[in-house]
Image (cartoon, rainbow over all chains, first blue to last red; front, top):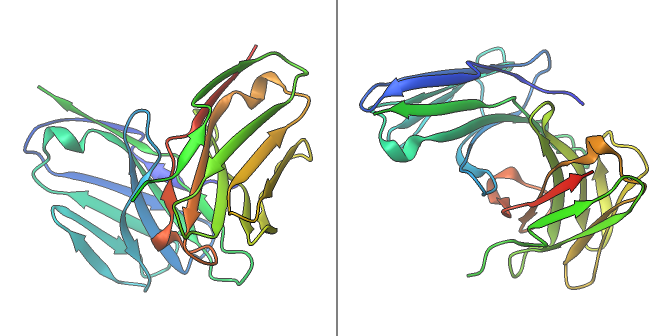
Length: 113
Length: 114
């Protein structure tokens, strides 16, 4: 099945550092979403973006909907231990009856003590 | 408010068997979607049900099927299991027609096929 290219695959950072990850696609999406998944849990929606160029924040998280509609970025500022987990981007078309999500490959964030 | 629940949480089967997984959506949610998550392929959309009707389907073989009951609970079935079907199967519910913003995932059922 189709996947979005997400990078980096993994990150090892120290507490307090900022984090950046991105997601690219060969297809245009009308909505970009970012999720976080903790071990043993399902993904939890962090941020949803609906418009090309849109910049949206949720606390220390900031995400942007790329102008080409084929990419998106997520930044986490001043990382803390609870930020550890796997982050997924997802793109969604808005074609009625075909609104399924296409997910990125994930970025695993680890905080080094 | 209770979240999405999935049963069982863990399952071990052997090749050739079939398996049925269950998902109970959040109360009032009428749309249920299923996903397969594997290390190699990531999260892949299986299908979506709304009001007992399949609205959308991913690119999986016919061995994967699902249904939704009048109380919005959903089941997915995999027949003739293959080793590659080992995965975390996630269910997500949303209020109306599939909208990612109102979609909540369950904890998943981890299936191991031996």
